[in-house]
Amino acid sequence: PMAPFLDRIAAGGDEVVHVSLSDEEVLDELPGLRLPGEGILRVTDGSTARSWSLEAPGGVVLLDWAHDPATRPRVALMPPRDVEVEVLDAAIGLCQAAGVEVSVIGDVAGGIVARTVSMLVNEAVDLVARGEASATDVDVAMLLGTGYPSGPLEWGDRLGAVRVAAVLGELDEET
Image 1 (cartoon, rainbow, N blue to C red):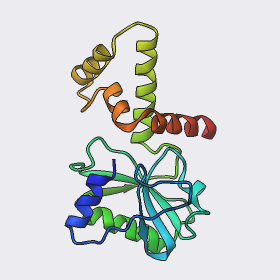
Image 2 (cartoon, rainbow, N blue to C red; image 1 turned 45 degrees about the horizontal axis):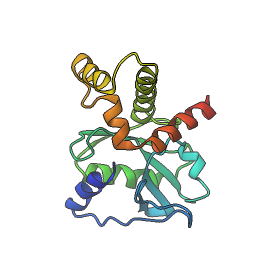
Image 3 (cartoon, rainbow, N blue to C red; image 1 turned 180 degrees about the horizontal axis):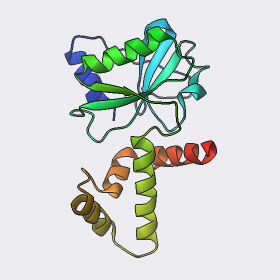
């Protein structure tokens, strides 16, 4: 979900550097950008920013999911309370360089979009599993009935079951 956003940043003239946070992790799915002050900007995987503190001494600022990263007009950033000012300012600056407005929210599991989408996907899967509706019926109902940009199952397919489950797991743990 971050690739089109990274393209927007690069188009603004900023160099985009992918970072590896650990030997076990591949950041193709959840890319990160090195920020000044040993910080990292990365897409949320459902965990809180403070849970990444050992991986980036300057702090990890999480970028909430969006439906269409190539065209989204606003993003939510979730820094831990103790993030270095330089790191947060750089994350905000990169987002602004990509041409998006920024809302800085608290460091909460799942952010705003990720937690909402994950819970919608979970409910949609439950409806289909109980035989109350077909996958197509659920997606069409949400597209037409709520004006969502995608049906929850389509969105869940695009994000992947592992990522949705990770957000739900983090929400469960946090609450």
